[in-house]
Length: 158
Image (cartoon, rainbow, N blue to C red; front, side, top):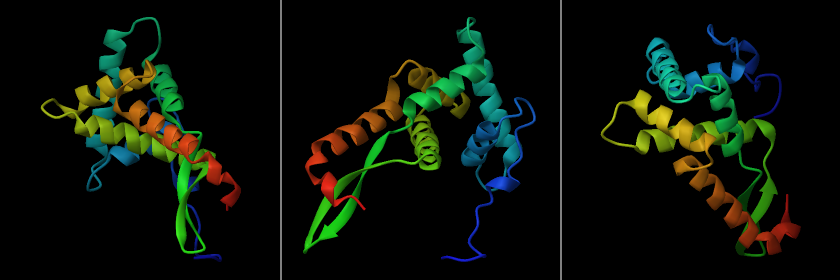
């Protein structure tokens, strides 16, 4: 869709009340199910509290920011149809999509850790991403490997 009706609502997002950070507010929105923001906020802040108990030399919010930066992908592959064949073309990822993919992969990895409360799973996954380990980092590495394997098709870039 193009035109004046297709606009981003990012300008309506308010920073979170504790850290006054837009990325934290967006991440809490990604955690949220069925409009239950208070539950999502409590889950996130509890996870940061757990991180704070485990790591004393850094602030938990800094661990969160570094974990997200570690997960953000530089390149991804997109399908491009050329002459009846589909090619996986590596393309650079823009900043907004990097953040979105990082949030998605982090939550997917945290939700995949079964048998424990979500706040503990989220704290564990944030710590793992901070240390450049875990499911979200594996997802990023796979995306980069796939782009590297298909760099011969880079000349088909959009």
